[in-house]
Length: 120
Image (cartoon, rainbow, N blue to C red; front, side, top):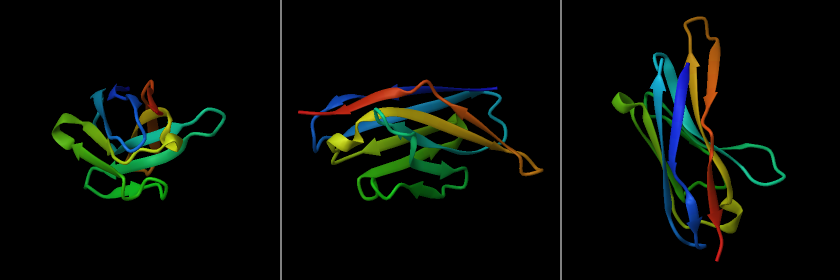
């Protein structure tokens, strides 16, 4: 099992910045991707950004240019720096981790979520 512990989040004004971090613990062997998803009230959970163990990144179009994801492999930690925040960035942000096995099967793990509210 993998445990994901998120930190950061909170209330920020439009145009402001916020950083999130997520640390994975437990049986972290074979984690090949970590990242962040978010869910706004009344909407489905959606991708924000992911990063592979090799450093490849993937961003949702809605956050490109405003969000940077980075990772610290030895610490099994992923960071999300969000700038120029907009009210539509409001939601619960969930840390995500994926394990990839040799037979290409995968396991997904989720954090508890942390609230990000962008409001004046």
